[in-house]
Image 1: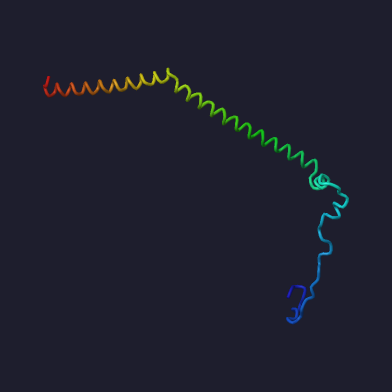
Image 2: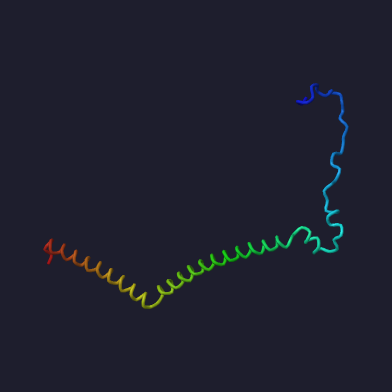
Length: 123
């Protein structure tokens, strides 16, 4: 029962099936005089759409290129730094630093052993 109908339908009444769609949506009327695939393509895709696709594709390509160039610049910088670290001058300077630290440690060890000997009066 609905608002505009006061009495409900009879339970034993069968409603007749009816096709309510009179015109079926097809491309037959629109593409009746189309001869080849390109004309069909032109019916669905306009030149303005293609221009927009090209425009936004170029924007995306430019963005990706700039991003890759920044990443490549970072990679190049790290490669140059790594190359500097592997040069003989850098390795020699690093070994001197390590050597002076080890030498200082050995001096401290000798000095501490000397002070313990003096305290124990072994000398």
